[in-house]
Length: 509
Image 1: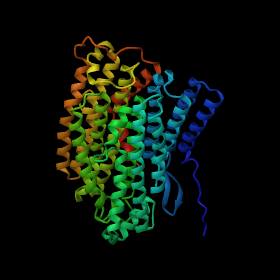
Image 2: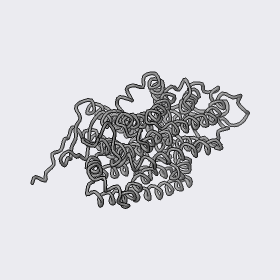
Image 3: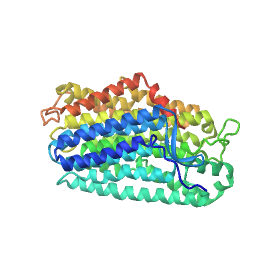
Image 4: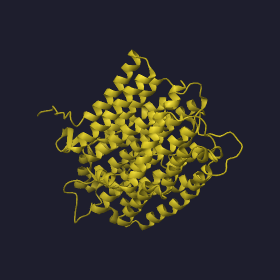
C-alpha cells in the first residue's frame, strides 16, 4: 500500500504566497527597519496573493492531500473568490491603519506580520476539505487577532478587549475540536466527503445520541466565530476596545472566516454522489437533517437581538458591532431553510449556500467602507466616539461623509446602496425557494427594524452641526482615501452587476 500522497503545488500557490508575505514582512522589518518599506512589502504580498488565488481558481478544479476521492485541500472558483477576498480585505485594513502606524501607537513590523499570518489562515481556510484543516486554518486566522486587539500601547481598554476575545475564542475552539473528535469516533472520518458518505450510506448513525452531540458542538463552536446569538457577547466589547482598523478586520475578515467554516460543514459535506434520491437530499445527510433547525433558530435570534440592541446604542463602534451581529443573522438565514424538506431539494440547497456566501461578500465590502469612513472622520482620536459627535460631519467633509452614508444605507438595503439591497433580495429569494416563507418574513421584518438606526445615523451626518468638538478634522492619508474609493466603487459596481459574485459563490459546492 502506497502511503505517499502527491502534492499539487499549483493548488497550494495562494497559501504559499500568503505565508511568504509573512516571512518577507518579518525580514523587511529586521533588515530595513523602516515603516514604509515594511508596509510596502506587505501590500505587494497581499496583491500578489489575491492575483495568485484568482489565477489558480480560473483554471480547472484542483485538489491535493487526497485519500481516494476525499481531499484535504481544494482549489476552485469558490476558493479563488474567498482567498482573493481575504487578501484584499487585509490590504484594505492595512490602508485603514496608516494613521495608527504613523502615530507610533503600534509597532509596524509586528502589526504587518500578524496581519499577514492572519491572511494566510484565511487563504487556507478557503480551500479546506476536512475538519482538521478547517479548524487549524480558522485558528491561524484568529490567533494573531488576540495580539492585534491588545497591541496598542498604554491602552487598558485594548488589553481588556484582548483578554475577552482570547477567552471566548479559546472556549469556542475547544468546543469545535471536541465535536470533531466525537464525529471521528462515530464515523471514523474527518474529510467532508467521507463524513457525508458515512451518514448517507448508514442512516442509523443519526440515531446515535453521540452524533447529535458532535454535530451540535461543531456548529455551536463555529457560531462563536460569527458572533451568532447567544454566542455574541464578546463582539461589542472587543470591537469597542480594539484599535479601529483591527475592529474593522474583526468585523469583516474574521466574520468571513466563520461564515466560510459554517458553509463548509453544512454545505460541502452534503452533496455526495449517490446521495440524491428523486432530486432531493435524503434526511440521512448530516447537515440538512441535523444542523438545519439549529441554524434556523440561531438566525432568528441573531438578527432580532442584534437589531433590537443596536436601536439603543449611542457609540458608533458599538452600533456597528451590533449591526454586524444582526448581519450575521441574515447570513445564517438561508442555511436555516435546510430545516424543512423543501429546503433540501438540490436546487434550493445550492441556492441557499450561494445566497449565504454572496451576502457575506456584499456585507464585508460595505462594512469595510463604513469603518474606513469612521476612521477618516475620527482622525486624531483613539476610538469611534459617540454618534452625536458625527452631527453635521458630512457637511464639513462631503466625500467621506457620503461614503459613510452610502455604507449605512447599503447595510440597511436601501438605494443607492444597491449591493445591500440585492443581498437581502437574494437571501429572501433563497428562503422562498426553499419553502421557508416564515423565515423570509422574519428577515423582512428585521430589515425594517434595521432601517431605524441606519437611517438615523445617516441623517445625523447631514444634520445642522452643533458648536461642539467635531470628529471631522484632519486630512485623510492617501492610502486610506484610496481604500475608501475602492470600497465605494466596489459597493456600487456589485450593486449594479452582482452576477459575478453569485457565479463565483455557486462554484464548487
